[in-house]
Image (cartoon, rainbow, N blue to C red):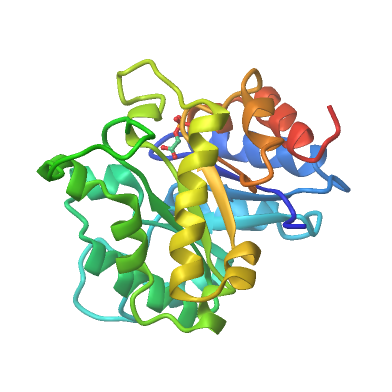
Length: 265
Ligand code: PGA
């Protein structure tokens, strides 16, 4: 059994006061729940949130939303894996907002994944298609959009050069771009759709490594998850947890989702 994991991606949100209240409230609410929780504040609030979480329950972790892949040097505006590791255990890599707005490539994401593992950080590797897929395989050549958002290719390239031992330490977040709450489509994925796509990702892992290892790697779903639809995802055996944006900023809803993920609601 893979222990469920809930990741809070605060994105570029929260004042210091908001971050403090959120982190403190989550810390006070999640002790003893059978779920691991990762809070990912903006870089500037990592240190204050780290202080808040210092004596926190063992199931509550800190994560960064991104990092660069080299250790020190001339890279204005970036932070390094060793800086992140001073405070955090996880790092989100390859989020679709960075792929789209900052043109992050699969190769750059792979460099970051390798650097994260070298620094004993757990990379949460995000992959997702831009447009909703028909679940049956379509005939004909794929369009450029389909090729660019081919989740199997995104995953294979992110894992380039990773050994089986490395792969044991990763987390994957399947996030269909069209289902993210701010994407403007107003759509969210169904549990069945997410299950099918996550199954495909697990097949990629099984081909690259082997089936038992693929079964041990956590694959999360992300995209418009909230307290109303969490049940749709969390009880699917293929789905090992969720990555949340908007809902992670609303503390009561977020805690409800954590409790649901732990089988406590
Ligand atoms: P959302 O964001 O939960 O607001 O849809 C998820 C994400 O982009 O990571």
